[in-house]
Length: 191
Image 1 (spheres, one colour):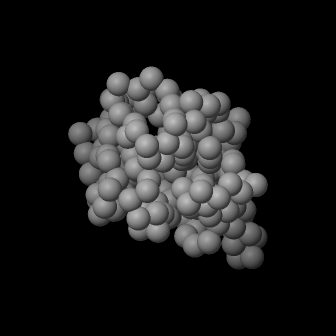
Image 2 (tube, rainbow, N blue to C red; image 1 turned 90 degrees about the vertical axis):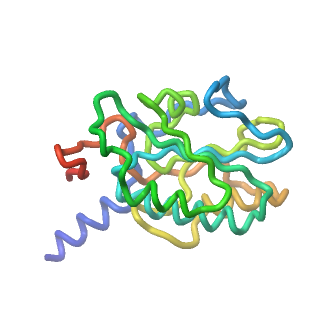
């Protein structure tokens, strides 16, 4: 039993490395016809796999950030829809959770084209751009799979939006791969 608990803890604390770690995030806002950046505001883009249970914590942290930044940050949630996804692909609690956060724009990202533009390969991965469109933070805003609460990623985003530049500009991401998450016929994540 102890070994099983240790293995589960190890999985929760291991960042996604499906693509060899985080891929290259563009240093400036990419050309993206589906997403307009609001001039003069920080913009946070979060890529999400709608079937990823690990991302519930990331979305919860996003809700906290939106409440704590009080209109100083625009947020976009990219829900990746792979080619051939079943009709009910997006009917998930995760999408409903995001819909409850005031100020978050939801984009249905067909084939993950927008996620690729932002260098995202893991569900829950965020990129924060300053008002001039320069990347100032990328990574995750949780400290483990499904872990809510204090973490360096959320703190870094909050500090940057409040005008304080801290030492953290990149963190690990804990979630399913956006392109490789195994899905059964019923749309449930497989382990």
